[in-house]
Image 1 (spheres, rainbow, N blue to C red):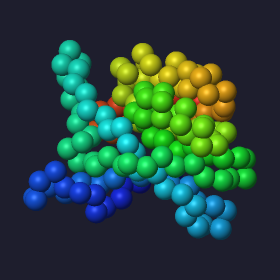
Image 2 (cartoon, one colour):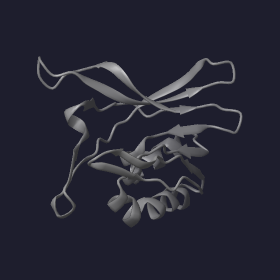
Image 3 (cartoon, rainbow, N blue to C red):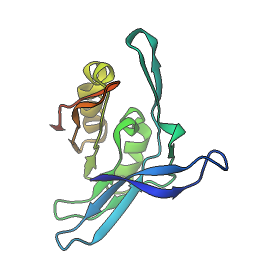
Image 4 (tube, helix red, strand yellow):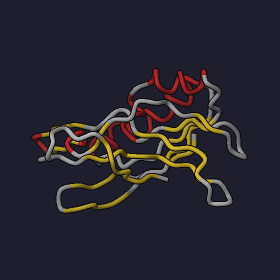
Length: 151
């Protein structure tokens, strides 16, 4: 699952930021691993009145994470990371057998790229990809595409 983690370094002394953190919790409720999203989503699509700047409120992580699970070694990532194939190649080089990609892709980018990006990461790395995807309206300006997939 994912959560916002406090105490990220600010962009300025008066600015507070969080980490977008992907956590793995075992059957006993213990934290097994946490991954802080590395690639932040900053985009402007003027024709659709969309401007999102994740870096304004979120700090990037710096470490790749692979952890053990009952179904094999998991490679952790979050959303926009899926656009960076080298990251997934490295996760697999470190032993990942299943790549996890929780996400909240926008409707325009999801419609255009979500399925093909997930299939690409699975094919390139000859492994499974599990992608939980938020769906619906977050607020008056933002909707998520959805389409959770197992590849």
